[in-house]
Image (tube, rainbow, N blue to C red):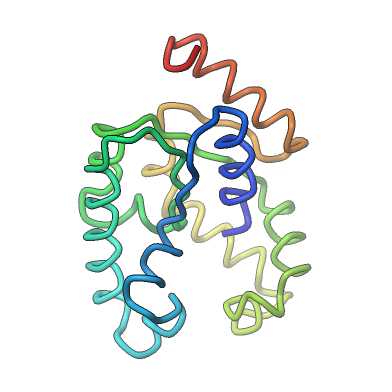
Length: 167
């Protein structure tokens, strides 16, 4: 959450002349409910099952695109293994300080920030990062999110070009 996945993904897609997809948006559209509503009314297990189904469908699409995933997506079922088998994965690694700063700024749109509270937010973020690091670190490329957007995108494009993934 707040690492810049959507912002970087959109910019990267434009740079590579590809379409951009957001897994959460696809789920919301398909289920005709927000992610927070799905969590609240159906529970996390239901959401994770749906998330996996939508992810599988998107990964079967043969068109190249940039896909942004939810922060928990790689951590459930065999999602990270599946994602790595079907695509090139990038982990936008952000510091706790940067994530706190961004989340507090967006607190009115982030119910989780309100429920956790600003004082407890750094510990909450650290806990989640520690739990998820083993999944995130399995990405093909790890890029610091603690830099300007243009630098992040340039780093990714250069890496993809060096791998002959894009001309």
